[in-house]
Length: 147
Image 1 (cartoon, rainbow, N blue to C red):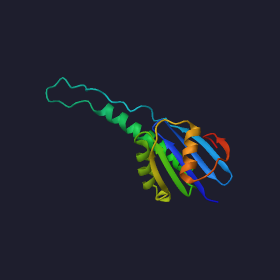
Image 2 (tube, one colour):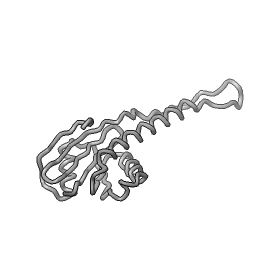
Image 3 (cartoon, rainbow, N blue to C red):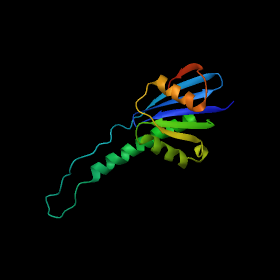
Image 4 (cartoon, rainbow, N blue to C red):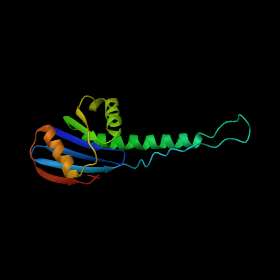
């Protein structure tokens, strides 16, 4: 039996729905990346033409990107046994996640479609995924991230 997986993703959370035979598994993974902080302006040294303080901002950006990679890695570990993956979401996270998957050799080529989708409830996400794969409603199993 083939496993079809749909993912609604943004930088805060991902809802993963797997359709496999007679069951439908729903899993929500929360991102611990936090907010991307943009500072307006910066501090200058007292010396004219001295170096500017960019270290703190760069460090924050690197930490944010590392946290996003960990988040994408968790999602990849959950969908690695899928035969087809449908990705949707409101922002740029879906495209970033697809690029992350392309870098991972085992998951390369599994994405069937990427779609724009605003904020949706879990039931709306499940309905959209079932429609995409042409499946009917099945018995729903809610998973915790530790499973």
